[in-house]
Image 1 (cartoon, rainbow, N blue to C red):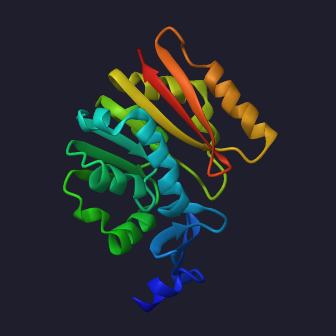
Image 2: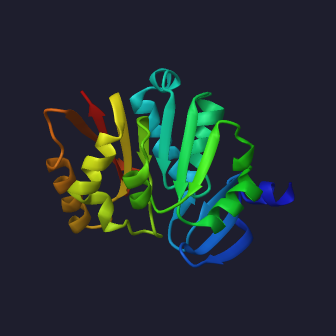
Length: 220
């Protein structure tokens, strides 16, 4: 309790760990809440939870409650899972795909992700998973980072088409991106230009927590 209270003054680190995939991982009390960070950015809870919550709110909590199956590509500490389960009270199935098994162990230990009854985690590469899955989803949340960088495959037309194919009728993609340079702004612009406007509507929520841009695609 002391560490939690003191964190309103200064962040208090309580756990550090190296991962072969995510590199440096830290659990910290900050402003009274536990957050999961990489070396240079927030991975779960804290600002990231606020970013994805804004995207979910833009979609509409009431609309999300009517969905049956949500896919989360990139789980980390599971902050968006907690938002869906505890704040929105989503009762449908949530499937999370995470390549880093060490992060899932941390998520279970510190954030009790394994206690969410309607959540199932799959340890796999997101690209491989979307190629293999035969399921269709009401909402696909893409939130994949390696510290402050994002894998190039996320922005390739093939991956975009495949994730769009996995959507049910009126399904939605919520894609969290980070834009730290003009090159990354152009990358996002190109991604939006690839969208099939006859089948999907596209919109963005720019400058969320300064450096993030949310891209929302919706099947017409």
